Amino acid sequence: MNLTPLASDFYGFENALQDREKAVLAKLRHFLETEVKPIVNDHWARAEWLPASVVKGLAEIGVFGMPWKETQPFENSAVFRGWVALELARIDASVATLVGMQNGLVMGAVGVAGSPEQRAEWLPKFASAEWLGCFALTEPLSGSDSARGLRTVAERDGDDWVITGEKRWIGSGTIATHAIVWAKSTEDGEVKGFLVPTDTPGWSASRIENKQALRIVQNADITLDKVRVPAGMKLANANSFRDTASVLRLTRAEVAWAAVGNSIGAYEGAVKYGAQREQFGKTIDGHQLIQEHYAKMLGNITSSIALCTRVSAMLDEGTQKDEHAALAKEFAASRMRETVAWARESMGGNGIVLDYDVMRHFADAEALYSYEGTREMNALIVGRAITGKAAFV
Image (cartoon, rainbow, N blue to C red; front, side, top):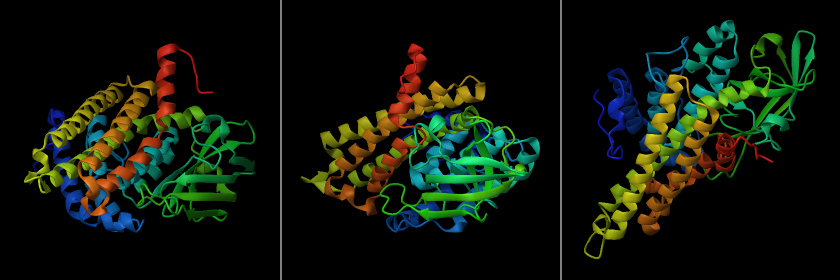
């Protein structure tokens, strides 16, 4: 299957991918266009998760487990994985969020902090989607300050750990089979990571209702009431928040790519609409102000792809640092917010109707703008690199 270039890839960045990567991206693009796009607005409107066949199809294409030697379906680059995130979000940001969480945060926690035995046993089950994961870090009173503000605790009891606390905004929390739970040890006050089956006694999850962005993602409030897990379920090398941060570092750049994809989805919807909608005797894409909107949107998209391409290449090279990923996320998410607003504006009143796709991307942008580090927090990470001074509080 040949890869048809995106018109929004104005400088042809996709051309730098390897042939095998292009072939898989083409397969993914076809799957999303035929199996997801026709149903996504309906599921978004009803805040309902997509059919199980979607997750199965993604697993069969090989989008899960790409970074890890235990599950890597083919040789691939971080730049390619960025294009996967872009492609997913171009169709729907909720699907991109699910894959980013399963592939990056959940499998990332196992890949970064698991023992060789844990990696060998657990990663293939997540890669095949036999297990569906969630990443339980954020709490009702702890978000950006998770490094010091976690209130969930883990206490040793014989050969087990007993975990008690609450989590909030946990994507896939009501549908996951397993969770990566972060909790402070009562022994040393350091943050530890655990793999917790969600059918463990004491675990309960309730969906957050009335959410108006990423409506397909099943975000949840989690309660852990003396949840008991064997010592072997503790991630062997997750012994402080530095280890948690190592996982987050892997995924932040891919969220930047997803922000670009969400921008492209809105841009494509606006351009398609502009070629059909007539005002003052001609289609609106022939009017100067609409074309100016298109040029501004395409400029945002192109500059963001360039930034994301370089930061992912730095991950491949082993030179990417926190501040590099933070700048990519902050910039791409900010440009996304502008782009989806211009896309909606260019469509007038029809821009708020779900049927034309743009409003979904407009609303979902607000969630992408905030998670994996708010704009302000990422700016402060970059500011610390510039000045050598931490200004978080």
